[in-house]
Length: 359
Image 1 (cartoon, helix red, strand yellow):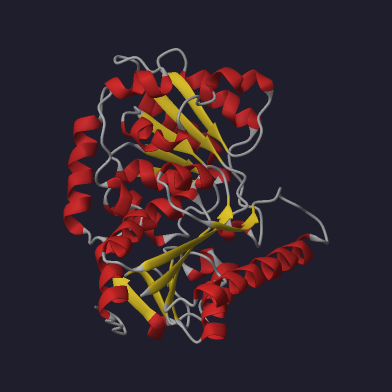
Image 2 (cartoon, rainbow, N blue to C red; image 1 turned 90 degrees about the vertical axis):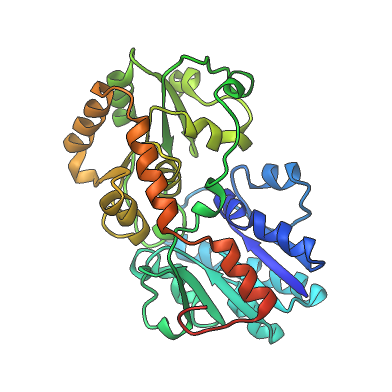
């Protein structure tokens, strides 16, 4: 069988990495196509996964030409994916790219869109991806609008598929990131908020002034490590994470806690058993984060109108002693409750079980 896997983000590669390897072990042909972003290419090269580039992340634009530029980029992206697909002739297209449904229609192939964002939180993506997809694989609580007949539910969070077996002790951190064995550190993640969720409107995040306040609260009790998708003033250079970014999940695993305006990495922190504090205007809009925050109590979310509450929570965490044992118990409960996405996708692809609501 020939399978085309389309990826738009480093986190998406982590989601599909085990699937790609399992498919190849079963003698299936796999073509990986990507929208290059952040460390996605580094990860693929490191794992010796061949890939084709469809497009690259561009800088955030504003004004009257934004919609035109987005449309132009998508058209070029779609045409290039179609070109590769016409030569590869996949039986199934799968991934997180909104173009795969359209391309599958062109080829008369099947397509599986994998998504965990609610329809109203990622409307632009869903309106393009869902009408043409054969199936939509999403957590059971994820809303897919009027496309419920296409949805295959699973009881899980897609990021869990690559965060259940993070290997390595704290001793590795010294070689990878120059972190001492007894060093307590907090990671701050800042994103540009130009992902699919934010096509329609800005959703806030951590500003430079707020970042300075956070650092003042954390020092001197904790070392501060910053991961930023956008450029920061040079005065923050000493805080930037230096080292092999492919091992960032190991670095997160041993953090005292995590602060960010990134949906993906806040969720990853919680799944790794690390307390997280999230600051943006997607709070209460994304079901899987609500699950992590309200059901499993792994983190907290605050909107940009709740700045003081956010800072108070950061201060609260600074004053706490080691919370690792409590969060490990919460993490164990999470993994005991949930299903593995990779196993579900393997059944779908290799055994053709296309049930309407369950496998």
